[in-house]
Length: 261
Ligand SMILES: [Zn+2]
Ligand SMILES: [Zn+2]
Image (cartoon, rainbow, N blue to C red; front, side):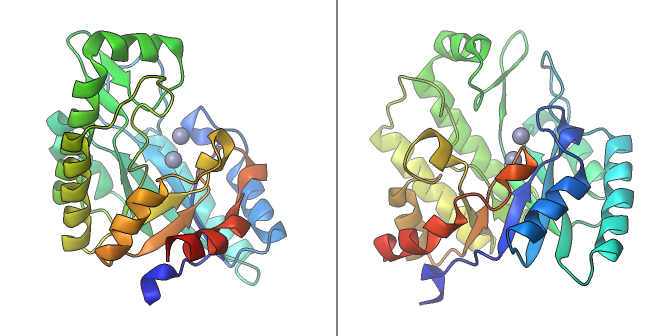
């Protein structure tokens, strides 16, 4: 049963200081990956387009030019020790789909991961996956139930409209909000989203950064079981924002797969 397997020799999701909320040079992440014995490391830096938010948590066009230059240098320098992929975590913004596609077309990507962090409100965008109080307050004001609904609907649009290979953060919405209740309606939306993922031949990310917050990866076992039933391949990502988090908790994944099976 191929879908019960997950390759823990590849960390398919790490950031760098280029996104302003992570630390460490690209080379430090490569060295950390080599030290933990990974066979492959894929950078998956943030792209957001047309977001009106009080800080930038993503890369500019110039940043991505540097990212590719430096990435290629590192690929050559470490070619005997590790494989390095240059990917992108593209955030969905329905109003800027064309511009997002233009930005994606500027480079070749070893992996395109899809996520959805920013929801448009009347005044600005709010970050649905943030732990900052200003976002938690904005979410309360907007309505938690409605945000979760929009999260899943738009994530499905993103899967249908963007050329992604991996869906990241399927259950990240409101992960820091204390009062999230998933309803029947939400669970049905997750089912539909997973159907889109399967139809578009995408993989689902098992994000081990979840182990930092609770004793589970992200997404929950429930969602992982649903994904496996739909024959969606699972890929591992640490979502490291610090070099020391590369490949973190990957040792727990084989046991997890057994539990799911
Ligand atoms: Zn990030
Ligand atoms: Zn990420």
